[in-house]
Each structure stands twice: as structure tokens, then as C-alpha cells.
Length: 148
Image (tube, rainbow, N blue to C red):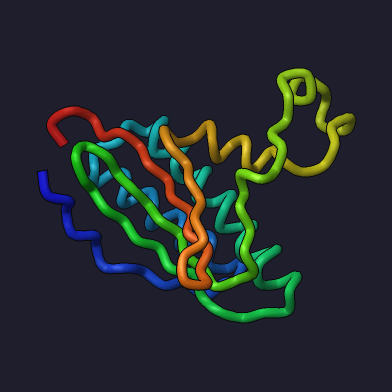
């Protein structure tokens, strides 16, 4: 089967104000692809976590301004959403995920960090990161319901 053409890319300013419209876009895309609400929510949360890190750490804390790009593609029964940005290279998978013991502790007793990446990995079937041509490329994939 030939890969499907990606939908037109969407560009968002790398600001916290862009996160609401990004979540709405992911929610609409997931619904249009027939994802169940729970799967759509997991995807939306995963994309939101990484986008928040891009905006906060990649741009704001570095004193940078710019945009990030969102690409969506449906291919072979899978929805793929890709976030791309030109901030400093950062592979979210390099963060150590919290252990089950850490997750069982009350919030005030947990060490800081790592939960967003955990939620990302848990929210999708596949999460990947690549560095291509000076850009961070975060890839989220979910299987679509059969018949989609």
C-alpha cells in the first residue's frame, strides 16, 4: 500500500497560548479519524506534553522565538502526528521514566520531572524522536479502528 499524502502542515507560534489551539487541532484530527475518546485523549495529552516542553524548554528558557510545525498522516490503519521545531536538539526519550515505586508515591514526595514523558509514552502506541536537518522531530502513532 502506498503511503497517504500528509495533511497540510499547521504552524503554531512557540508560545503557551498555542497549546489550546494545538489540543483542539489534535482532538479534531483524532475524531475525524474515528479514534475512541479514550485513545484521542491519550494522544492529545501526549502531544500536549511534548509541545509544552518544546515551548517552555526549547524556546522560552533559551530566549528564542519561533514556530513549531504539526504534520498529520493516515497510512496503513495508523494515525501519525509529527511535531517539528528548530530549538536545540533534545531527545525526550533520554529522560529516565519514573519507576512504578516513584509513581505510587504522593505527588509531594516525587522527584521532579519525567512524568510528562511517561504520559507521552503511555498515551500512544509508538513514540519516536529523530533529529533531521537541524530540527527536532517528535513522532506519535496510534492504530486506527478497523475500517478507518
